[in-house]
Amino acid sequence: MRETGMAAESHSLDLAPVIILLGAAILAVPVFKRLGFGSVLGYLAAGLVIGPFGFGVFTEPQTILNVAELGVVMFLFMIGLEMQPSRLWSMRKDIFGLGLAQVGGCILLLSVVGLALGYPYQVSLIAGTGFVLTSTAVVIQMLQERGDLAKPRGQKMISIMLLEDLSIVPLLALVAFLAPGAEDVSLTDRFIGIAIGVGAIVGLVIVGRYLMNPIFRVLAAARAREVMTAAALLIVVGAAWWMELGGLSMAMGAFLAGVLLSESSYRHELNADIEPFRGVLLGLFFLAVGMSLDLDIVATNWQLIAISVAAFTVLKGAGVYVIARLFRSNHREAVERTVLMTQGGEFAFVLYAGALSAGLIDAEGNAILTAIIIVSMVMTPLYVLIHDRLMPEVAVDASGVETPHDEIGTALLIGFGRFGQVVSQPLLARGYTVTIIDNDPDTIRVAADFGFKVWFGDGQRLDILQAAGAHQAALILVCIDDRAAATKIVELVRRDFPGALILARAFDRDHGLELVRAGADYPVRETFESALKFSRAALARLGEPEDAIDDALAEVRRRDEERFALQLTGGMYAGRELMFRTSGESVPISVKNEDPSA
Image (cartoon, rainbow, N blue to C red; front, side, top):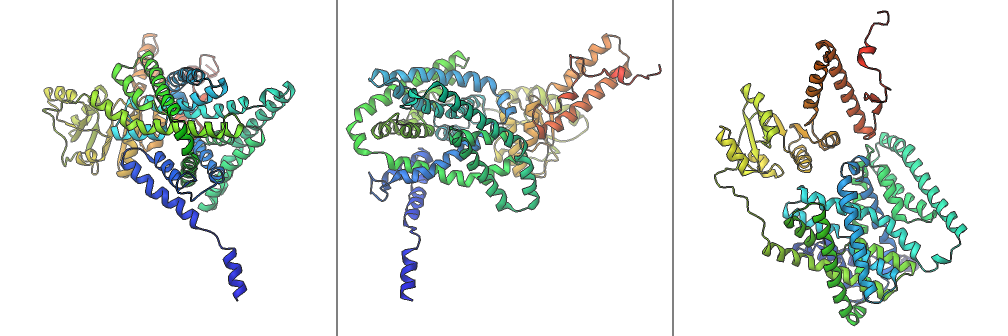
């Protein structure tokens, strides 16, 4: 019995390190978030305290880092899930115009810092590029706190960060290309490597396009949630492994897998299954980065770190401001974007870790660059505080307007602009009670001059919706002209008032699809009906009889509804054959309906 006990003791799992890791994160992250520094800095600080250069609880952070890199892989998979081709297309101007200009311009500017300090161009390029990648965690948190996330200025920053997230994949490939010894590879070997990489991508695309959805349908029919979770993990890890076999980065494999599944009906379930693993492993990654920070190196090179932080911040700030102004943002918006986006971000740690593994930088260089990013992230809340003191938000003059309080109405109408005003008329004409809210005091005052009672409030706030009677309204009509805010309101109403019937104004077709996925029962494209009326007038002036015009418009409506339904599951290009095209492929209605014997 004694021998058995000793054997069991010798083979028991040492849980102390796990407890310390989790405990450090649980203690540090809430404190740092409360102080306004964000969870990323909390993980880094916790790792620093328990690492070899703190209390020395862990002496081999690289071991943890190797496992925790799966968190980065899963993070990129989830970014891919959000990158629906239709969404990318709708945001293409901001992502690939504004975003590409800011990233490209800032990379050129920041690479100058390393060259000026006497470093090789490879190191200068990687160091500067890492600082260009803004901290998504810090900026999103700041935008949420400031209530700017759904506003146009916030959406532009999100578009830029989407491009930065997308750029990490080619940047990791650039690290491999710049690695020592890469120039010694023969042209034949390089072409073979490219062919293998392209083959790996094509193979993954084929599997994702034709096999993933059928497999998930089979698994979903089995109604075993744990199997779906295991399948989601298998896809992420399998795609990463496959791309690594092809000589490409694991991150690229995970990202591509996410994009391929972004239009899948199982996207939200995959997101929910992967999120807990992603969060824990990504937290471990930041803990390991904090452990790896050599304080002796930082202390020895503090002057270099201080100079680099100042130079990177000034040059990136100049780049962000100039690009913002070139893309027609006003001075106030450009300054705010500059203040929020001048820090380096969490993807810099991924890039620098890759550069360290590839031999582009040594451990000392990695420690210095990591310290530069951390200091810049710590400084961001201070920059924001100074900005808000020197350039306070212009206060909205809400004098003479009232907020709603326990209103009761058949319909709740959100947004009383040119669209909402027209929507209200038939409802009021039929005697229905309509509660109207708008967040523009000037609109409310003008409406009052015409005899309308409009309450002051933002439909994105749950307390305003409740006070306006959303919980008992038969209809909720979202009539605002802010695309992102409209989607957010629909999501909020569907979540907190699940029984509500939601009609929503859509900016365009893609936005209509987005609203349906968010929970809208009936999206109305703001130009669709007016365009059909315009077309009716055109046909009438061409001498078409009324019944022929009616048939034509009815057929267009039918095809449009059918195509919309197909696009909900098949993506933006589904149902293209239903459109009447200038190529002559579609038969005109007058010919189709004509009696062949006539």
